[in-house]
Length: 331
Image (cartoon, rainbow, N blue to C red; front, side, top):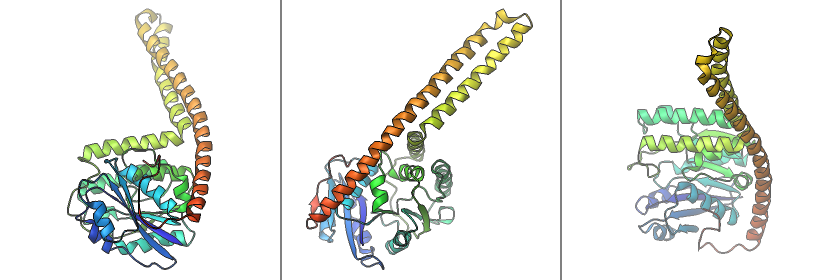
């Protein structure tokens, strides 16, 4: 059983050594532990530091592509390296390295496909009050959209089985955390949440520049992921809402028309008719989108099988650990 611990990095040469030193070198049930660093276009010597510390694999992006792209590149490289379990952690040392054993345990026991490290946001002393409320709200929304019980949906500390990694296709350009959970929930993968410890971070997050921007980007990511896997529900729901809104002004017109005063309220008839047409068109879009979604599922199944074949080929011709470029299409 091989575990690959992947660490997305952007200018982490200063903090990376402490993070690497805290990672476990032995876990019960794991035969081999390898470390993978994704250098997402760093302008410092992050990649050199990683090699100096004996990291087994280094993936480099020539330019900064963002966390989601770095995560995708890391997963592809980990699968190519023969990983049975992939753990993602941050380079800033926020997560306690020893807790990797906690989040891989449910996968080793066959109880989960994906395990998310729960930082205990509501009571975490390292989080401010605004961050706590936002994290709780975001997690509640993801739970509803993904139909899973996860109390810390945006935690980047998570373990993924090989089978789950092959089935997940990250499409967002912002952050993979919520996109992955919504996908996994709709694909009926088993997802568990495990309490983990955190360390105080000495610098602000590099994922977003402001809280409002983070809220907007995360909201767009969640809406897009949910619509991708539930197009019929979303578009038909919107169409029905527009239809109902269109009926109100039409009923208003009919009320006045029945009283002999219809000539002065033709605008209600026009507005209502327009909304009814928009509602019907939106519902039709939902049907078309659902057909496209069905085709996408077939493509994803083919992609999963292709990844399985690639995994067998890579396992048969496994190269020595070395620096490798991202696979085509990985980011």
